[in-house]
Amino acid sequence: MNLTEKISYIRGLCDGLELDESKPEVKVLNAIVDLLDDMAFEVSDMEELYDELSAQVDEIDQDLADVESDVYDDEDYDIEDYDDEDDDYDFDDDEENPFYEVTCDSCGQKLNVSEDVLLEGEIECPNCGEHLEFDFSDLFSDEDDDECDADCATCDGCPETED
Image (cartoon, rainbow, N blue to C red; front, side):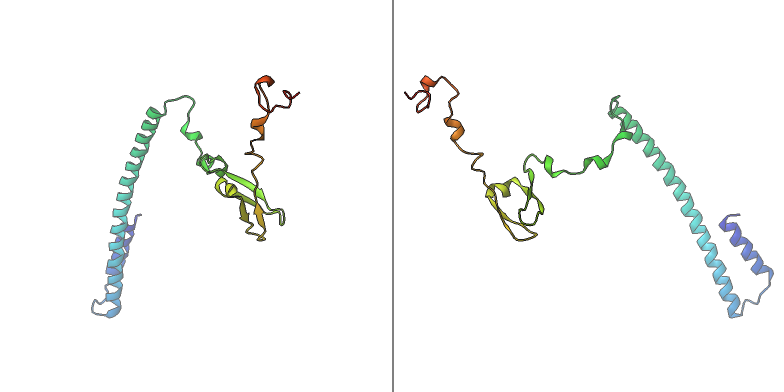
């Protein structure tokens, strides 16, 4: 039995009791039965709309599967194997502004610091307040340019050409 059938059964029971309609209790009971009847019709309408919507979603799903099949018609690519969790953003892969891990000598706290901050040359440890300095003079020195890789006779000031 569905809801509308159950409400009709309850309405029949109430009518079979032959209650005096002028009493307040009977008015309340009839109002409750009317409310239940309206609710049953609303639920029935929602069930029908849900069934229609479900059918439409199934059609859209099938259409999407057809589009995926047409677009991704590559044997190596399987849409089922695609995992969104593999797309987590990794700061280390950012080519425009890479991050580097720096360890504070005082407290041992590991910090992820951008290249811009490193090039500024200093930062304060957020954990202990220690002043951290970064020295890149060894990386950018001109000493490597003075070393002789060519024929020593052409180099000025090369130790090998000095007699």
